[in-house]
Length: 473
Image (spheres, rainbow, N blue to C red):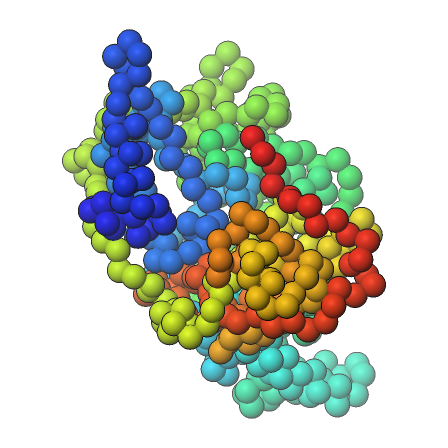
């Protein structure tokens, strides 16, 4: 990778790139080589051309000898707590289907939602929810016309509505959501603490969080909901005489979360045979670092560092460098947006709000502090627009529009903003266009739009502080 390519990817100047490389390569006192841990997060993952950008960062870590060395490496920071085995992608293919686009185009008949509020979190959200509501309403209207208790008539009405362009929606979640209002069936799920949960963090540390309270009503873990669906599909298809199709749903006779864990992780993960719920309980909060390599003295033996022997999981054991030249803004429409609109509308999470605020909408403290999503702006940009702190602004472009509360941020560059994503009172996804790269990876981060004032700060925000949220080190 050239210095110019690295500068384009990272946003640093070529001079800074050279200085960083020299610092990494420079030995510390005593002659030992300096080691660096390269960490990345959502801005890289959900930004421009992310496979190549991730690949470029790993290339740097490999080329500087930081992989497999004490104090060095490359890792995703934070993110979802995971502890599972992914199935193969042969049934999906590559690239995967662009499901949002298919739904907008009127394709598909039944849509299953699992723990996600697309109305707030998907790209091209304005068009998506407009079409989604129209299609699901077609099915609701058909269902409402059926006399109560006539099951076959209800099934026939739903099928007819789907064939006419409608969409049947099934929502699996732990709380009511915006997209859930469009659903025809809601399957309540259990969350951490209401079920036994195995999870893994960024340092590959797996542990178990045990159930300590009952889930509400008849809510159950996702894996058991999926198993019930599979059991039902197998039964119905077998009764219909489609044996080959029914066989695809065999093997989901799970009764507990542990059944699913044994079937999936223990049976398929590298080193999974050494892991069990009982052994994880004995390991406590610290757990073990995956992959497991054995079980000795009552403890799972983990792996502190990968690739310490310089051998990688390739046919010849050598690392593969990804060809990752800078290709510009890859998602369709991004270059045109950038040229047409004044402001970069970057977006993401904030520690002040949990995820997409799906819990916080019931939290009076959070909703009082953030009645509207903030958009951080350079004070000089605000002055140029006639906007003061707390004023409501409209953010708009060719994809849609949304609203936010102006938050003066001196460290923000002119022409660059940061907006809280997925907030119920102002959905930033409305102004993210539909563009993805060739692998159907969305680019949420590079979005441009214009900003105009809607109103002076309303009564509900006049009590708020607009001090810097940044913590000086």
